[in-house]
Image (cartoon, rainbow, N blue to C red; front, side):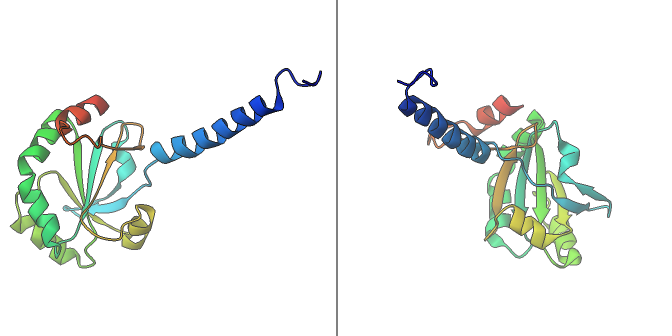
Length: 164
């Protein structure tokens, strides 16, 4: 061992490798959620970052997407329970025609939560790496992505409560 180094070079290499991997994975696992600009059903402009300090469940959908509408219906009670726990349900439509979006929201009253229309659909699709809808994201109070466990026996409500 050299007088200039307090520990062997191999130990330094190990520390450097660990730091590189840690920074790569910690960035991936707690990546900040990109902002989404949108229009509300009343025509007001707003954005995702107004919900900082809240847990937000983002559902990206479209009025023409049958699986989207089926999932809203299928999980209506779970979504209602999440909302009652304090989770913001932000339903972001990527419809290009605002009239079709408004008609779908009115027709399908089981779409609980806050219904909004993305104002920059291309940016939203790119930022959230969306290749198909429906697409879902969970954002914690600090504005970072979080993920449900892979456990088949998981309790989704309990996992959300841990983030509240």
